[in-house]
Amino acid sequence: MVNNNQTTETIPLDKYGINNTNVKYQLSPEKLSEITVEQKLGEMSSLGAVSVNTGKFTGRSPKDRFIVKDAITEDEVWWGDINIPFAPEKFDALYDKVVSYLNEQEVIYARDCFACAEESHRKPIRAITELPWSNLFVHNMFLRPTKEELKNFDPEWVIINAPGFYADPKVDGTRQENFAILNFTRKVVLIGGTGYTGEIKKGIFSALNFILPVFENTLPMHCSANVGSDGETAIFFGLSGTGKTTLSADPNRKLIGDDEHGWTADDKIFNFEGGCYAKVINLSKEGEPDIYNAIRPNALLENVIMDEKGNVDFASTKITPNTRVSYPITHINNIQESSVAGQPKNIFFLTADAFGVLPPISKLTPGQAAYHFISGYTAKVAGTEAGVDEPEPSFSACFGAPFLPLHPTRYAAMLSEKMLKAGVNVWLINTGWTGGPYGVGSRMKLGYTRAMITAAMNGKLDSVAYETHDVFNIAMPTEVPNVPSEVLNPRNTWSDKDLYDSKAKELAATFKKNFKKFEGEASQEILDGAPKHD
Image (cartoon, rainbow, N blue to C red; front, side, top):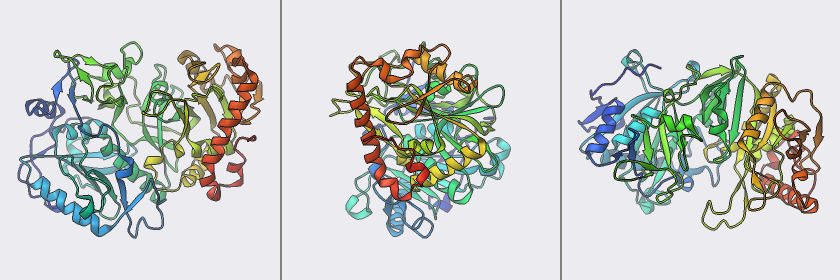
C-alpha cells in the first residue's frame, strides 16, 4: 500500500471514553522518530533507525495474557494455562482505569491501520498508544492505509496501549502489574504495564487466530512464506531460532511475509502484516543482508546496546538476547507487492534438534504432518536460558501455542484438509545438529539446508529413493543435489550407532509424553503419525 497518509491532525476518541484533547493522529514515522529522540525516550543509531529500551519487559509475558470469558468465547476457547479467562466486569473496570490514565497524559498518539492483506478478510484497526515509539511500531508492522482509505475509516478493533499504567492485581484481577487482554465482544486489545511492542502485534494475531477459523473458514498460521516466479508458494513453520526468517529470504523468490499468514477457503495465502519484526542478536551484514539493510530511517530498534556514536553492538546481550527491529516490509527489496499469493505446493516444518536425532530433511505423510504440526518441536540449547545446562526438548503446539485461542487439533484438522485438497508436500527440516548432540556434533550447514529446500521445491526429490527412519518412521531421501549423501541419514553421522539409537528412542518418548494431552481430540490418522518405538 502507498504510505501517503501522513498528517499531524487530531481525531476524536470519545467513543472509547478518551477525552484527551491532545491526540496526535497518523503522524509520519519521521515525526514519531523525531519526537522519541527529542523527548529522550530513545536515541538515534548510526544506521538511521531510532533505538529504544522497552523497560522491564523485553519479551512477551504469556502468563499475563488473558481472554475475556463471555458468550462469544466461553464454549470455543481452549481454556487453560495458555488462554486464561478474565471476567467481563473486571475488564470493564480495568478498561475505565486505563482510559482515565490516558486522559491525564500530556499527549497520546492514534493511528489507523489494517490487518490482513487479502481484502475480503481485511480488518480495520485503530491503535491508541501512550508513547510515540509504540505508534511507530504500529506504523511499521500493520498495513498502511492510503489517504482515500482513511476518509471513511471505520475501525473494527481497537488496541489501547499504556505501558505506564500498572494494574493492582488484588483489585483488577490480573496476576501482576502488567497485562494483555483480548475482549472479543468489545473488540479491544488492552495492554498495560509493559513497553514490549511484541504484545501489540501478538494481540491482534491472537484475535485473528480465533476470528478467522471460527467465522471465516480461514486457517491462521505462525509461519513465513515466499513465492517463486512460477507462482508456487512455499510456507515455513518454525519456532524462534529454527531459521524461519532466514530460509524464507531467498534471492530467487519473493517474500510474502516472515511471521503471520492466513490460508483462505479459496486457496490464497496472505500476510497479516505490513512489516517484519526480526531478531537482531548477532546480526551481520554478511550473514543477514536483508535484515541488516532494512535497519534504516523509520525502523525501530529495541533493547540493543550502542556506543556514544550510535554504533550498534549486535552481539551484546546486556539488556536481553531478544534484541529486535521492526520495519515496513517495503524495506525488503524482493517482496510480493500484494502480500497475497496462491496455495502452497510445499510446506516446511523447521526444527533445530539439538539432540542430533532427526534427519536434515524428511517427507511426511498427512498423518505425520498433522502430528508434527500439533507437536511443534524444537530444542532449547544449553546457555540460551538460565538453568538450561543440557539440550532440552521444547514443544509449542502448531508452532505458536501462546497465540492459539482454540484447541490445537482444530488448526491441525484445517491444515490437513487444506493439504489434501492442494496435494501439498510436507517436509520436516532439521536445522539443528548432526554427527551427535549439541556439544559433540555440529550445526547443519546453512548451505546444505538451503540446497535441500531448493531441491524439494524444484521437484528434484520426487523421483529419488527414500529410506524409513527406524524410530520416527519418516521417509528420508537417499540423495539430494549438492548435499553429501552421508548426512541424510543422521544415524550414519554418529560414530556410536548404539548411542544414536538410544537418543532417538529417548526423543521419541518425549514426543509421546507431550502428545498425551492432545490424544483425546486427535483422529486415528494423526495418532498413527507418532514415532513407532518407545
